[in-house]
Length: 172
Image 1: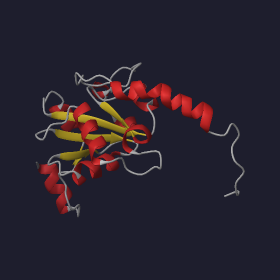
Image 2: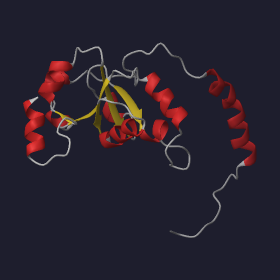
Image 3: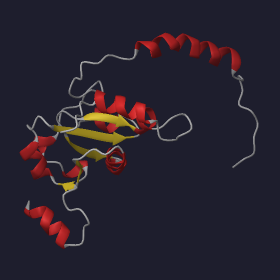
């Protein structure tokens, strides 16, 4: 890959990490390719995304209630839900692609890359029409029934055990 060599020659430590739109267009039909948009909400994704891409919502999928990274089991479920296999080439883009890149490297995935351009520079051939649901390639998995059973209990706790008014505290 000549581009990777040029990036390495220009001082990038790993020129194979960044991919450009022409590379993506060439590989779009590769069954091992997984495209992941990483963002804090679904607004941009729902407005149009790369073909076959899935959304990783930072607040919902990657961080817990204390804004700490979710545990390995949650990451594993997210990877399975996203259709990522050990042989997959995973390309991250969006608001925080480096976060996805870092996580996949943390969990030792072999082929992880970042799309090196913003949405404004995508060729029309790479943009999907707006969507009403944040899906992607179907994984065949349904929502976790245990979580759905727990929902009424969470609502009961919120209604009965949490204060109705915010507690006074120091202004930060």
